[in-house]
Amino acid sequence: MADSAPAQLIEVPPALRLIAAACRWPGDAVRNAAVREAAEGFRDWPELMRLVDRHRVPGLVQKAFAAAGVTVPEPARAELARAAGAVALKSMACAGETVQLQQLLDDAGIAVTFFKGVTLGARAYGSIALKHGKDVDCLISARDVRRCVALLEDHGYRLVVPRRRLSSRQWRILLRVDKEVVLLSKTGIQVEVHWGLTGISGMLPPTPLIAAVSRGDMLAGRAIAGFAPDDLFAYLCAHGAESGWSRIKWLADLNALIAPASPAELEQLFRHAEVRRAGPAAALALALCADWFGRALPPPARAAMRGKWALRAMHAIALANLRADDSALPWYRDTPMKLLLAVTHGGLPGQLVRSMIAVDDAMRFQLPRPLYFLYPLLRVPSALWRKMHARRVAEGHAAGYT
Image (tube, rainbow, N blue to C red; front, side, top):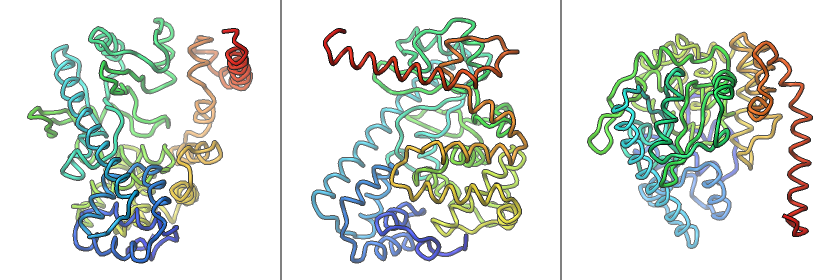
């Protein structure tokens, strides 16, 4: 966690080192020099493209290579251009969807806040074309979620997660045990409607963030509701930590967002994250930005990293996840990170129970609230039943019975 170039900080394979250099921001002479240094003598282009896809950063890598004058041989050059073009096209589609949703919900009098996605890309990079994204995330007050989903369904959206249809009782349970539903638009854009921001009890409660929302983001000439800048920082730190920091793209987006901040402003951001009850996640995120991008680590964040064993353990897990070959985290990397986050927030017992509640079980068995403690006991037999049922269905298809 020193404050120097990433190549001097952590040992990573050459392809990942080159990608990390390309994901630095701003895209200035320092970044370009780091890219050229990392690219010197590099030959394993298939491995680089595999990791570009795994970390979802083709737009950033292509732009950095072009700016630094790095020559990429065929077919890697064509593959990188195709992937970067696909990112730009998807972002344009998501931008159109965001504008449409803002208008639709404004007309219905439903307050909405957009975060991540194209608005983050515009803030962090000054362009929606660089940041990879596959969906539109929005935050709705829990009391408005059912009305919002019904409105979207009336306009051709399809509820797909957790299931196509939910009874009133299932809705009540879902709003207690989960934080989002997923819909598909008529054009196939995935829209995630959130009423919570994390699955960690006590971390980043949404109400204060909603109260501070502004309309400073512009898409296609329309003002879009988004988090205040310091709240967006706190959220990105919390999201990355809860996701195990398994992709460089999340860290690159955060690093780009804070790139203009002075040391004093960076310390202010950290202090604000503490107010929003995301201080441990912010300390971890800033430490990783120091590791990978040479970002200066504010003294209070450094002190937090040194003073809390749980944060040091999370740091080791995050570094392992970023270096891992596969972004699909096994339980022994995903679950410990969430439990350690709960430790830093004093909510370990509740998190243990929450981690064992499968949303599918909650929808199927619909236990009354006093019996929620039984959901963890149902998880293993329910999972075994689903696995056996899926196998029987597959065998039936193979035998031509279904």
